[in-house]
Length: 437
Ligand code: GLY
Ligand code: MN
Ligand code: MN
Image (tube, rainbow, N blue to C red; front, side, top):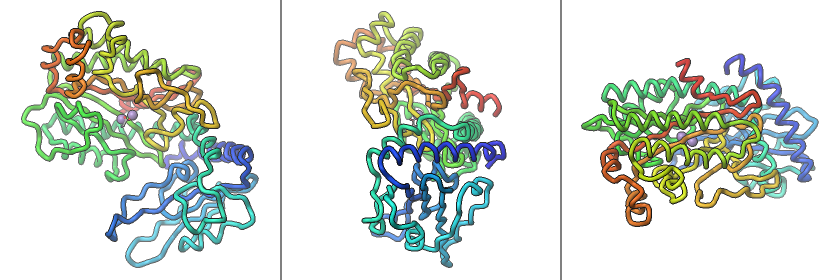
């Protein structure tokens, strides 16, 4: 871990100890046990799925190791039971020795039973993680009241978390540059992906989510999941949505490129300009739903400028035409998970804060507070399924179908940045990182 990030860890640990203590007190628990998780075996096989630490554990411990327990009782130093099994088939995990460990009482456990036995008895424990038989009668698994409070608190990041996300954007921007170079050089989606991983210094399973590496019309599939091993016959456009990891946090970045100047390049420029205006709205006190609704208005303007729609901007939004081209939410909370928890919570007890009517895919409806980190990701896509629906209803006359047909082969555009809400103005971690890369 970088020394500047490292220096922020003690205050982060103190902050999460304090807020966890308050959540435990409010819900009547003496303490909390958080499992890092295990790597489960695939069905009828002896091969494990890739291991991912549980998000609750990553909040406290920046290194991913299976089988560990974080044990916290208010007023005591947190106990890290670090699982270090010894066998000759695997390399045992290295005992952590980073500066962050000084905040913990670190003990080694050789197996699951040893870790479980090291947790004191006679307390009312809450347990976060996949319920294990060993904990039956000893801890209450995932109590909803407590989980809601902890999830709600995770939206506002500590300065340490913001720096982790800044580092994740830095690494992501570097890898995006490598991917763009590979695409401009004529590489296939598969080879672009390899270049991305090489530049991010990460195995595929270490990335915060499955990268979307989409040439031409593949960009119209919102979560396109394949990697074509063959380069496309013609290089028209490229959309890449890919993040990078840092100490358990991850960036979530999308860039779109046109191979030549022309209508599609104009569309990319229009979405980019709209994205910057929306990112400027990320300030404490802002209702995130308003950013989403403003995105529809701005994107209607882009659609009109590119000749894709007829009639006014207001008509396009009212009639639902913008939802044909922009059918997802403007973004979400970002942090330990790419779609971080608590986006729809109206308060710490978990009351849902509703989405605007007709916008079922928006993942964040909260009022932004200082330290919230969100994505801003407007897009315009040519999705056959949605276009055919619109052609069959009242929206038919509001769309210029010749213009649509001229752009279908380009797939779509999305521009996605990671932005921190702060009282002195938004901090765009992603633009900052591209500016340096
Ligand atoms: N990469 C998934 C998303 O942008 O939400
Ligand atoms: Mn996203
Ligand atoms: Mn994304």
